[in-house]
Length: 162
Image (spheres, rainbow, N blue to C red):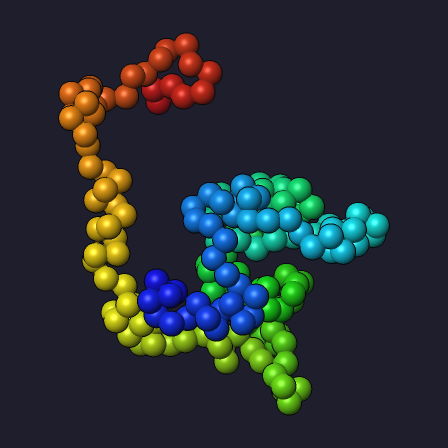
C-alpha cells in the first residue's frame, strides 16, 4: 500500500523501510540495534523502550535491550520515532523542529480523515487482498476431506476446550 500510494520513498528518507511482514519485527528479526546505541544502553544501564504496531506486547519482544514496548498505530510509531522518546505529551509537545528551527507538532503532520480516505480509495484495491488472501484460504483436495472441527485433547497442557 505504501508503494502504491507513493508514500514509501518519503518514509525511507526518514529512515523507515520495509524489513519484513507479520511477525518479523515483533519477534526481533528486523535487525540488530546500532552497536553504539546498544553499548550506551549497557554502559548506562538504560531502561530503553520500543513503540510497535502490533497486537501483543511483552518485555523484550522487539529486542532484548528494548526492555518495554508500547502498542500504537503505525502513524504513531513513526511519530514517536521522530520524537525519539516516549517521555513527552504527543498531543501537545513538539516532535522536532523544521529546517528553520520551528517546532513541528503531531497535528502538523497528521492527515485529515478526508485525506486518508482519498489515499485509501485510490490505492487500496480488492485485487491486493485477493492475490494474498484467496490463495491463503484455498483448500486443496486433501484438506477438504478432513474433519473441520478442532481435535480437542483433554490432557493438553497447551489448549483445552473452554
